[in-house]
Length: 71
Image (tube, rainbow, N blue to C red; front, side, top):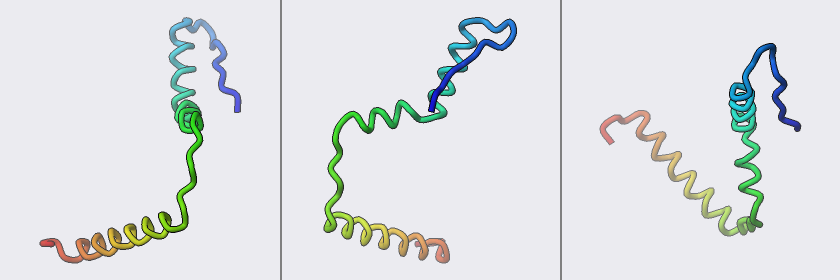
C-alpha cells in the first residue's frame, strides 16, 4: 500500500505536503505502526470469557434503559 502525492498543475510544495499528510492520516498507517512497535500478548481464554460476560451485562443494562427512560 503505497501512499504518494503527485503535483497537480501549478500546485505549491506546501499544498502537496498537506495532501500527502492527510492521505497518511486517512490510511491510519501511523496508528497501525505504533501498535505494532511492541509485542502485545494475546488475552487468555479466561480473560476473554470475563470480558464477554462484562459485555453481556452492559448490553442487558442498555436494553433496559432503552425501554425504561427513568432508570
